[in-house]
Image 1 (cartoon, one colour):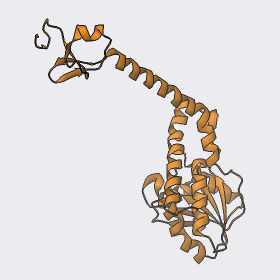
Image 2 (spheres, rainbow, N blue to C red; image 1 turned 90 degrees about the vertical axis):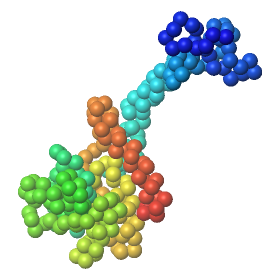
Image 3 (cartoon, rainbow, N blue to C red; image 1 turned 180 degrees about the vertical axis):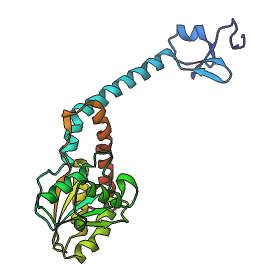
Image 4 (cartoon, one colour; image 1 turned 90 degrees about the horizontal axis):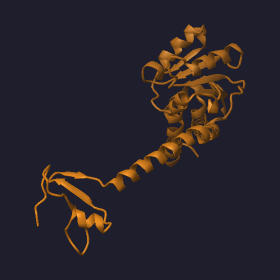
Length: 247
């Protein structure tokens, strides 16, 4: 038998797993047997059939993804959304993670303060930039919030810690109710964590979304951006449940 060559005139060979062992490419193709063409000792090419299947599956995957973004995503976001109707409380709690450049959580909290829903706003979070309670308090001052209304919790790095570290402040000041302001996709987890940590304290928990869910009213690019947070939120909810941080 002639040896396989790389770039020569001789035919390439098929590696076929069968009782017949190794057969010439022409014979293997005539028999309708799929295999891997050995073009060089260190180079393997997938058969045309395999490549067609890969392209087909990729196309199907993209279609499913786009369908999810347009039809399933608004439904998934709605489950996490608890509403944007505010309630009177002793203090508003703004959670870290208020993204630049809009600062929707901070802006909503200041708006509620001006409307008389609370006398204090607690900004909670460590981090830097939009993830810092200290930084958000400065943004609130820019929105003309009085300094006397600001309380800062500077150590929290997670949603759980937002409430764990704010709890002594809330109880220490004698607050009997709090109004949580956060993003729509973050509302459910924040509310469940607060309920768990303040169980038995007599503190009433309310929540108000910083804005309404975008749903089907925004562009594909916006859905891709916020859809990432929505999908991650479901994994975080599962993780918090397994850790016993929510019930």
